Length: 282
Image 1 (cartoon, rainbow, N blue to C red):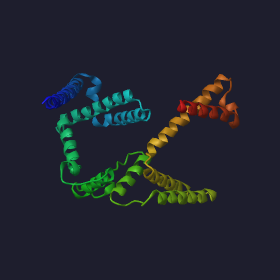
Image 2 (cartoon, rainbow, N blue to C red; image 1 turned 90 degrees about the vertical axis):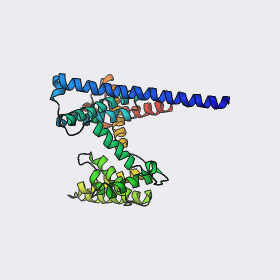
Image 3 (cartoon, rainbow, N blue to C red; image 1 turned 180 degrees about the vertical axis):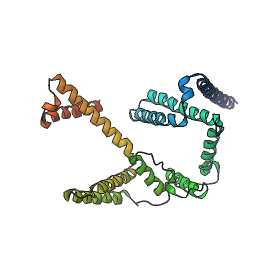
Image 4 (cartoon, rainbow, N blue to C red; image 1 turned 135 degrees about the vertical axis):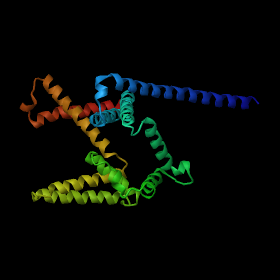
């Protein structure tokens, strides 16, 4: 009896906490909608904005979120998500002013899409792993949503590296893929050899072969479960950190980079690498 009572109390507490947080979430979301209405009515800058003028700002905010994720800065991630949420509400407000759509329509659409694309949760479909879920998504898009091409959902304006990764993922979702990572690695080596030959001959096909090599490397990244965009950005951050160490310490030693030899610069570069290794160990 006591155990049953304790269980009931725990259930009640969980439901209470869930309802409490849900009320806060709905309250804050409602507050954001009210603020947006007020800004759109009274603020000269907000009144001036259009779908088109917000577009490049949204792209910038998305990259700022990406930076925060790469840096693993959870507080920054929270802030950047808020900025993106504002943009979603802003677009929806402009849509409602045009009698095209409002925030409720946006939310209804994504809710319906999520239910439709998860028949293993909201229907009778059976799946055993995440790969089968992705495969089902591509089938649903073609069979039930009327898309004529598997690649139609890849935005034209995506950065090329991301675009290559997404196209390969989508093609893989309908079975067009390599059987294993070794095959892909062999393809990388093949493309590298072809590029080497074109460079040696100073051929006009250098660019094409270089693109083929990058495409093959992106393909290989999927098989070793590495996101190529994240990997390249982390390499960028690492290069920037080491190069700025070189600049700073050369300057402290009274040296100017343009007067230094590569061998002299490399001393500072190696110091930066050694310092990073020490920090990782600690």
